Structures are given as C-alpha cells and as structure tokens.
Image (cartoon, rainbow, N blue to C red; front, top):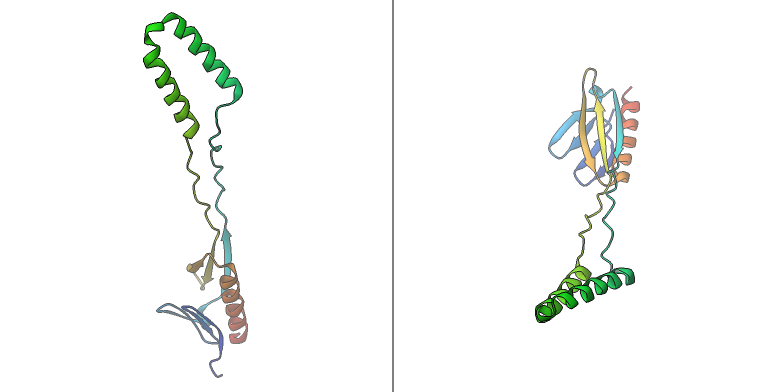
Length: 142
C-alpha cells in the first residue's frame, strides 16, 4: 500500500501510515482511536462601568456640604476645593475589563494501553480536520 497524504496544514501531516506533529511521528498502525474535546472558558462578568454620580447622590452631598459649611464657616476655603476634587475623582473611577478568553480544542489519540494529548489549538476546524483525516487513515489501515 502506497503512503498517501490525507491532510497537511501548518505543522501537522496525516498520511495513510503516519501522523506527524512538529517533529513527532506516530504510526497509524498503533493508533486505536482518536477524539477531540472543546474547552470553553467560564466567562468573567466584568465589573459595572464607571458612571457619573447620580442626581440623588449629588443632592445628598450638597446637604452634607451645607450642614458642615454652616458649622465650620472659616474652613470653607479648604472644604470647597476638597469636595470638588472628591466628586471629580469619584466620577473618573474606571474598572478594568479582563480580556475574553478563547475556547481551546484538544485532540487525543489512543494506543492499546495509553491515551495522549497530541494537539491543541484555538482553531476548531484544524482539530476537526486532523481528527477526520486520522479516522480515515485508521479505517484504511484496518
């Protein structure tokens, strides 16, 4: 039986007799089965985006300001700029949003007494194509 290339892309080659991934070669005759699995990350809910102070919050802060300004009239020169800085700072707080993680796809090949992960990628179609080509090679060998 002549060796026939069933799939070749990037660093993966599947022939009727061999599976070659990077510099590792597996004999198709020793492979009993092949499978793949998808690993989908749990989405991280981002914190709510920063919003300006609501009207209610501004009214409450104003009432507090009026109460304290009546009690501490001489300190108004310090309190007013300080309060303005606090309100500005509260309006500019931003929460970082973590980057979304991509799904990962892994291919496993089984030998008579061993299972090993041989390939992983974020490209689902690559993994599916390799698994399909391997299944064809295994069926041709049998």
